[in-house]
Length: 454
Ligand code: FAD
Image (cartoon, helix red, strand yellow):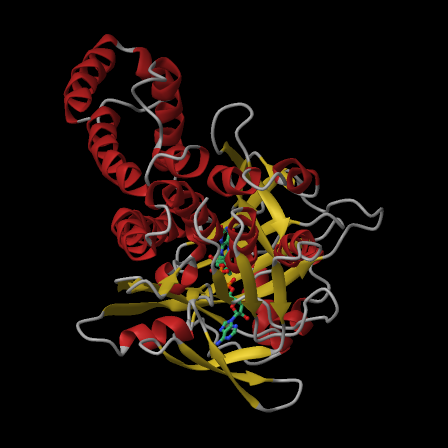
């Protein structure tokens, strides 16, 4: 077995907590530091989204520590998108084939479950209320604020994982090293969480097993179900402009905007104004950086090295996949941490970049296109293609969500398939057109070409 190490994880979010379990399982001693209090004992405000969509990549990593089934039991499967138009009419679009779903889970519930699993493990110790303020990478020396005593504490680390999220202080220390590549870009949109409470009978006021979308070009609202019958809605809205976070100032402004834009949601949102004016506006950032490691001393993981916008529902899934991949690589590098870190960052970086780009692309799709009848027809034709040629065609959304194909491969194949779809759609006015001999021939020719690219 690899030599037992004293490992420090900075950040007890979803990724840090899961990582601690994987590392302890390999016999390492893990200390995990978190700036916030223990979320199981305190009600935290202003969290980043109340619920999240968990999909195959995330489940695969949870399977590795034996909690996939337990999490599925407290998650709500969402089999497809339910689109709400301006008149309140609904259109449903399945996400994948029969049996393929994404799952709505409580962020706090999942995080707490991971902590509960770690707690009895003598090799894992949580240190709450400890905030990393400064890190000397060369000396492996961290300075933390103990929020219980108000005092500063020095910590000597042997091997440090930075799982401290999109605004990582571990990454901040790496940024000060020579020739470090870093970029962050914000969308001009922010988000705000709102609530649709449970119906009077305690059930769900909308279809429970779907992700609801109100796509309106410049604005978009989505809603994911919670176990208690409520939905958490997220309004994506421009920061500035004629209708924006800046322009909505009063209850009346808000109600007028909602009645015009999301009329069928208004009767379901009795606390709309209170939620809107008391909840914070979250920003939407993409972070790219490289390298992710410093010698054999530190490695970034999860949002700390690849924060993505939430429109593919993959940020946490990608972070969990990081852990799965790293765990596999640990077998090959047997204690050679520096080369392990290098191999890991080299192998993962193209996939992290790909999911970052895919997530921004999906924003445009969700906001603008899902309401377009041509787009919906195209989706139906694409399902026909993938049903007819299951070995040769997996829709992009399915590659990302229901497989573990590398994100970079999904992005590349998605582009190839997009070109083919554009050619095919020139001949299609209705679903029936798909069976026309000229469409079938065109498709066959294109699939032969596509196979050669693989
Ligand atoms: P975080 O969850 O940010 O955890 C970092 C932890 O480090 C936190 O506990 C923080 O308190 C702690 N920390 C930070 N700084 C310090 C410090 N200096 N010292 C000590 N501790 C520190 N992903 C999905 O897969 N599906 C979704 O549906 C989805 N929806 C989303 C919706 C929204 C609105 C947003 C914003 C994101 C969404 N994501 C989704 C992305 C997902 O939230 C992140 O990818 C995921 O939380 C990353 O986990 P992490 O542990 O790397 O970082």
